[in-house]
View 1 (tube, rainbow, N blue to C red):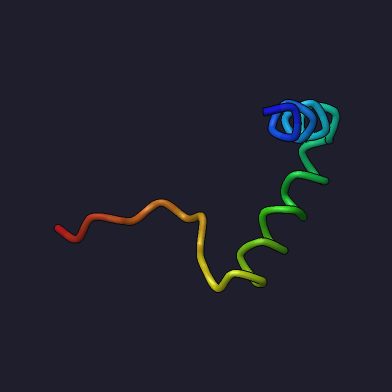
View 2: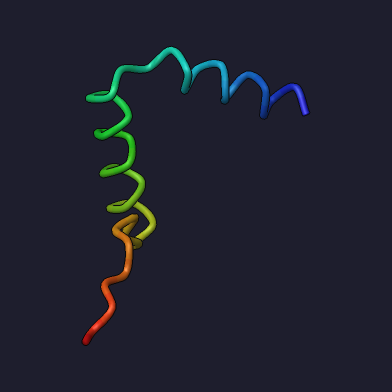
Length: 41
């Protein structure tokens, strides 16, 4: 559990721009999208 706590502490210390870059990198690396699905009317 210490690894999880360390990761959370590191994320808390990041700026919004850094977090945005991290999300984009994870999306590219894992081939996923963090965008919320949009309902079709």
